[in-house]
Image (tube, rainbow, N blue to C red; front, side, top):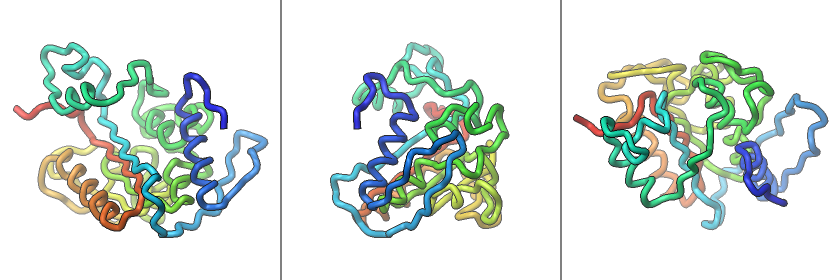
Length: 234
């Protein structure tokens, strides 16, 4: 596959989907319209070779590029993000698809522009026929988990566009924003009140999922979507 010099988010998801399809022996013809037809996804549950990368995709809510100390903000202290910026790879011109919550999350999930999947504002859901990165990676045998704010549909099992129906094996999620002592749905069940700070609850759930997959030597995708900006404790 020839990669663009400056690949878009959709290019990235297309590449990930191609990798997943090759690993599972699944192939599909190029769609002839913008209406995407979901593949028949069967989770193999098999551990894959260690060369397959684990993916942890984190997102904070309503935190702009100027809300971090490594980008020059003198009031907000973000020491952990500063460490990541100093020791990792920074994409300084990697922009969100929209200045709103739900369209941005939908684009991260699908690699498509919000206009193409009908999610224009906050509280809009993505379309049921959209293929997500979680569904693509499940074809390759990945374990998939979502933890935190969902906001592209409801989270309860049996409802349209819940995380389980979008390719995730395990979830601890909320439909929208949440704060202290949140009510979160685990694997689509009834919301339960979990005492504590929301980011710590979400992070611990994600770490527990990651530890189990690492012990099983199974590659994983973990979406960790915190409901508030990450800053230093005061």
